[in-house]
Length: 421
Image (cartoon, rainbow, N blue to C red; front, side, top):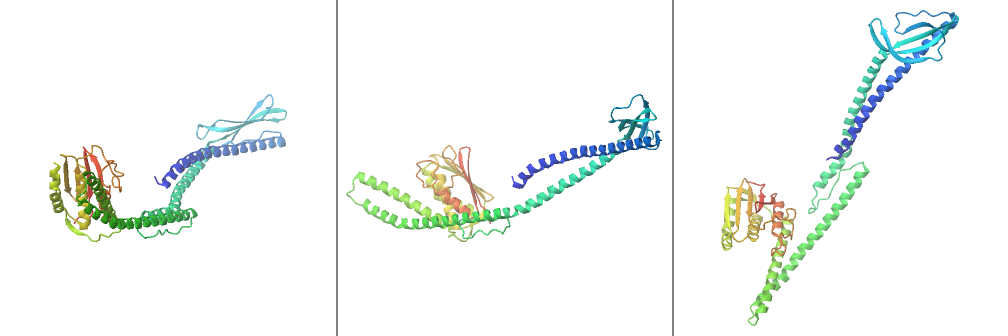
């Protein structure tokens, strides 16, 4: 999930709650303010009536056309305090009861006490309240939408240098000399991140280069001593005075030297592949090459009673011929070496996809580690754990893909070619 989306997940609910709270509070606040204003009007009317009574010692005449209604009623004793209440009032023009605000107080006229009731309808206030609430609602909604749009645009612009840096990092490869060049940013945190990324990339490239040089030098330096040991063992085996025990020991050493020699050759091959020393692609008839390779392994399969089935269609690919020979040889060798006595191998080629399936161990190999160097699916295995890693390296440099799965008791390697002729 993107950071902006996560941020909006927290922001939007908060804005919605704020929007609802603002709308409700605005409604009651406006309503209360208008009611207080109406109460002020009633109190001013009270003051005018009291002033008129004091000056004229008579009750004022009230206009019948005014929505504010005033009623005078003679009472025995004066009211102790004024009363402001909400009630109903009949509007004659509409012949309808409306909620009104009522003020009740008493005045003394020529030693007679009158109860004065002034009512002012709240209808106009209600309409005004609704109008103001609608205006407020629309204003808040517009602000809400503008905030979302602005927030999205601003965040996208602010985080753009971050995504630019990720694009640069994504294109970085440790086995190249290209240095990371990040776009400039005026945000200190992003500059700090870029500097750390650059330092980490430089360290990784330097360590990779040192390790690569060490591997190359070690592989080459081991080659000469291995050749000397191998030749001396050949001379030693030819000695007639060797006992049976000595012959067994020499044979064990001979076997170990051969294994070490194969590892050294595989490492040299991996180094050459990493260094892109195999250049140039050729058109290869994949079906023809499969038939040739099957002919080479036919006798070996017969000796182990391994049955095989081939189903392929005519396919031409563009591939480095030398690398393809190594690739195909390793695939067939892997399917043979790890097979069972009286097992079987299925070879299928269609639409530029080659699948080689073989019987073997009744449990899958770890798919996350199978293509790692020196990984052995079975402990104590005689193989050096480099064959499948060589296949993976060849696919990587040739824009091909290989994957492994275990299905119905079969170990299946699926090779996809991208450069189909």
